[in-house]
Amino acid sequence: MKRVIKSSEDIFGMATIGRHIQPNFTVAVNPDGNRVGNCYFKYYNRENYNIATHVTRLNLRKPNKIIHKNRDGKKEWQLNSSDKKAICQYLDQTSRYGAQFGATNWDYTLYSWNNELGLLEAEFPEEYSSPFEAFVNGFYDTEDNMNNPSYVPSTLERPDYTQIR
Image 1 (cartoon, one colour):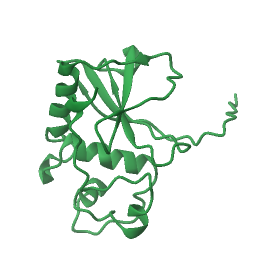
Image 2: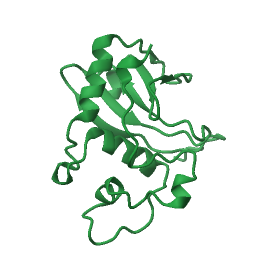
Image 3: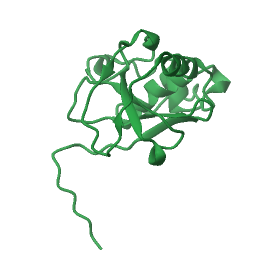
Image 4: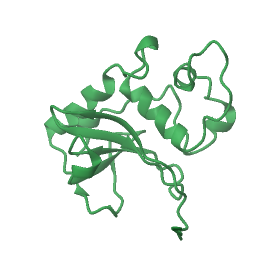
């Protein structure tokens, strides 16, 4: 059986950054090619996307939400102070994918965003064990990437999401 998809929307994959059990949430990136320069991650209210009932999109560059229509039926998550504190703590924790070179979940979020957009295609040098390590060390922060409005640099500091209204 063939499935035909008709859409003007670029199709990218969703990359799960991680799941957290207590408190219960998932962090993922899912870039939309039609929203150039609109860089965010999705914060779901359950440890699994399939059972989540609420989601919010948090801007990667500043402490605010990005509002889009949720086509999957999930409602906009109105974050309380505990939710905001939990996401900050989680993003600051060491990433299981880059613990050997000191990467955090924030670093992995930035890497995954760029990777899903196809901006990290250059072959990385042998001094790095992975494209993630090369990203964290600034290898992909090239002039071309830095001029792309959808690229987030490896040096981008995590916004203080506790400041979201």
